[in-house]
Image (cartoon, rainbow, N blue to C red):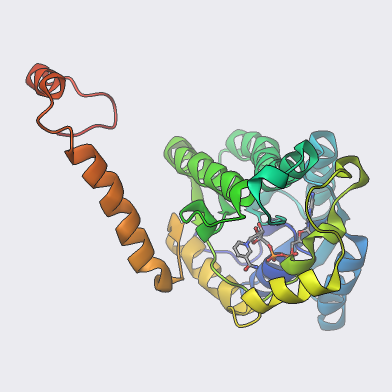
Length: 294
Ligand SMILES: NC(=O)c1ccc[n+]([C@@H]2O[C@H](COP(=O)([O-])OP(=O)(O)OC[C@H]3O[C@@H](n4cnc5c(N)ncnc54)[C@H](O)[C@@H]3O)[C@@H](O)[C@H]2O)c1
């Protein structure tokens, strides 16, 4: 999407951290009108102040992205206030970490619902509207380096982020014909409020095998991201990627050695079967599966 100025962006998680950074840059620097959608009214109120004092066009909507019906109403409201949404930033997400064997069904459902189904709901809401208008658009999905790198105690979070990555890679292929660009943002550490994610966990996911609002845990989690990139700096990177129509937004090269090792391991596992008799038979037939290139 080349010219962002004057267009409308809908940003989930816009009340805090990465989403708020995106709202600031897209509005104050790129000249967009921005809709901030967030489950936390206090986050929205605080974020909206930034735009109010500067006289910038921003509108806040309280939305739980896991609620498909409410999402549709939020999209209607956004379009009533500012007109058609051409950029969707699926940024809202939560994290809670711990040993896989301690996770309850609610622990799984909360993160799966927000981190993956929230993104899916955003796409299911805005994609048909974009296609129907026929003037293209852009979708930025936020995953994480956890969409590539499994670590102990991150099974739920990793699962949701791998899902966002897989979904986004397919979306990219399928939406090209509609001139809808797709970007996948995979941050490493970003200095946000994600350490206190559990404060936005709704009552309906009450049963947890992990921690609650525990100051010592918050302090430990914050120490992991406190030296991370500033959300506004990250948002400037995202803005440029949207303008270039980049799919991958991976501004954390410190992960290169890990990723190289990971893909080397995958390729080595495949090479083990290169002399396999059945592989030789399939190769002779010359009819690879879609996606396979000999
Ligand atoms: N901060 C990091 O280091 C980091 C690293 C990798 C990926 N991420 C991802 O970046 C995204 C943004 O996180 P952040 O770091 O800015 O955290 P944050 O907590 O500062 O902001 C997330 C916002 O999402 C909102 N939210 C939570 N559940 C919601 C729901 N159901 N519906 C609507 N809004 C909801 C929260 O109220 C909050 O305002 C997440 O998807 C997260 O997984 C963050």
